[in-house]
Amino acid sequence: MSQRHLSRSVVLQTLFEWDFSTKGATPAKFGGQGPASGGEIWEIFEKNVREFAPGTNDRPFMEHLLRQVLEKRRDLDIIIEKAAPDWPIDKISVVDRNILRIGLAELLFADRNEVPPKVAINEAIELAKSFGGETSGRFINGVLGAVYKEMGEPGKNDRPKPKKKYGNVPLDKLPVIRMAGAVVYARHKGNIYLALVHDVFGHWTLTKGKLEGAESEENGIRREAQEELGVPITVLEKLGENSYSTYHPEQGKILKRVVYFLAEAPYQDLTLEKKEEKGGLDDVRWFKLADILDLNFYDDILPIVTKAITKLAESK
Image (cartoon, rainbow, N blue to C red; front, side):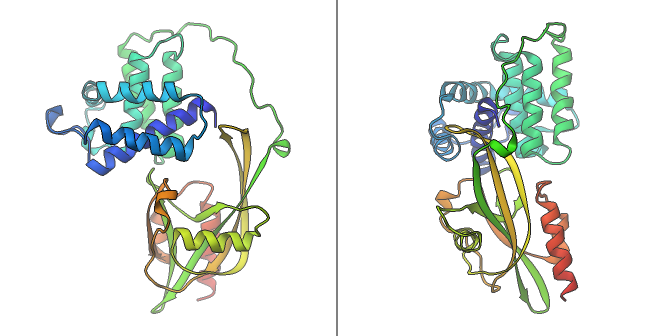
């Protein structure tokens, strides 16, 4: 993840939390109460910077972008409804409407030497691919593309400046962050349930976390399950692993390697413990096996979940 993409992600998460917690879609044709006070959103912003971008040197960009969206939000929402007349602003998902606000703010008001129109659109689409639903990318592209055409397509024929090349480091040479995760299940009254955590971008996912020091993968996921689910687990077998590159504000490009296990837990109330330290998570819940595949998962998690469901279904 590039630094600028990380910065936009922090702004998006801040707007999402603020909007979601206050049901802050601009109501009543943009004349009603907006979200809570300006002070509250800056507290959320500070929390997210500490959580997701500690040590960043891109803070001025984040603050400027967030302030621009806040100051122009009413105008941005009017433009969104004009560009997507079949989608009232309060019917657009919280993630998508805030991606649109960010994209439009950059498309309409940013310095075009710093953020050309095509870059503003492409960056919004990348946010949608990372944090939105299956059709979010197409939706964001359609709305911003319509606005761009209404603007007369500025910069359409400009030759792009040569881009600096970053991170041409082979994956096997990147610093590796060791992580462990688990598909946690329980049996209760003849049914099998999976314990899933929900993140602020609307996805259900698996409990996982970074290993501490020389901690083993099995011990690490036992600790993480206690912190994220509030239950003890018995690790049964390895399901597989995922590796993906991302951006660290101090280390630059890194590789995260997650080993996933199948683990059993007692069926008891789940609690998201250490919630203040798990800033990207907002819920935890049991789901019956039959309901799992209807949920919104990240693409890289689905093969792990499917493999676990197959094993559990065969063991009934």
